[in-house]
Amino acid sequence: MDIDDRAGEVAERAEALASQGMRDDAIALLTTEQLGLNHPGLWHNLGRLQLDAERFDDAIESYSRAIQLGYPSHVSRGLVYDVTMRNAEAEADYRTALGIDPNDLVALVNLGTLMVEVGRLREALELLDAAANLDPTANWQRAEALLALDWPSLALEAAEIAIAEGEPRANLEKALALVALSRDPIPAFEEAAKAGAAGAEVAYVTYLELGHT
Image 1 (tube, helix red, strand yellow):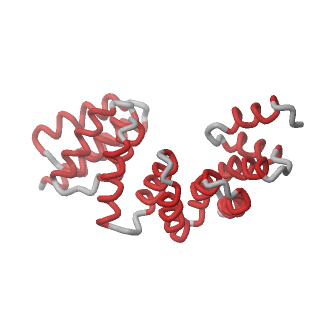
Image 2 (cartoon, one colour):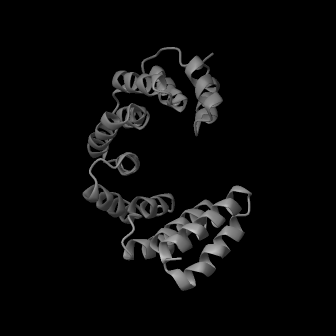
């Protein structure tokens, strides 16, 4: 069995363990097997499991090893940097990924969202426009950028496109746009909360506490 076949067999065993809720065992298996294989795909898989376990430093190390061996793990490592507020490193990894593939949807969305968070809104909109051209559901994140730019009518339009394309969490951006337009947002808030949109319940309660019914 050559190294790629062996790595594939190990990856399947690790995935089976993880799917049974035995994530730590899957991580231990990959860590042990890598001592002999040093396979880029396994380093990537190990990084993914470590990220899921919130072992962020370990995930960065594993993704870095994968990248050193030629595996395109830049977006994944960028996400770890992103969630740990290491914005400059996250941006660098996302831009590296886009240098490899300008149509990398995840890199476009993640970088666009990061640009919203750091206030570089025009850059964010350019990236999220490109993402939405590839996948209309990315109008969800595009709506967030448009809200930040104080363009609620365009944000409402974008959110409604995302919802029509099957992304109900965009009801939160729809609701916020309706608030800005002095229109009834309550049905959209309710749909957003039902869809599990992050922050939807808090935004809805805050809206009601301000005296809106």
